[in-house]
Picture (cartoon, rainbow, N blue to C red):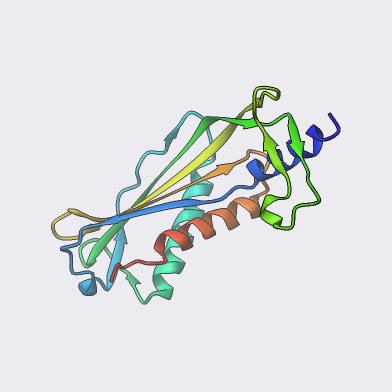
Length: 189
């Protein structure tokens, strides 16, 4: 049991570290070099099973996107004059995670290869424990459409574990980090 507690502590710490997962897609036939100006699409309805402050999230997402686009040389304009339209959607949902944690850990100090020092025992004499937890997952989706044709030409999504107890500063940093990762390679080359 003395061995089990440190393993559970390490497992829970690793699980609680929130990473942002980002995915991108774009129309490979689109000429993104012609995009110089943008305007916001009509606001999409937020969704999810957990309520959140939409107006605060709206301000943070728009400010972060506008800063990133400005840094890349794009200028904000009216929808009538824009080369592309950008919009976003957000959702906050409960997720379930299950992880197996071994009940025994064999720490063999005589090993010379650091990769082999310590092995998780999961044979018949040792059955893993399953740790199940519920967490909140935030999702942000950015959409870019050609302003004239209204066809979607680029899309990116970001997902991360979030917590209602996070401070406003932590939430702001998480949104900025997500938007930065999402727009890092925009426009595609």
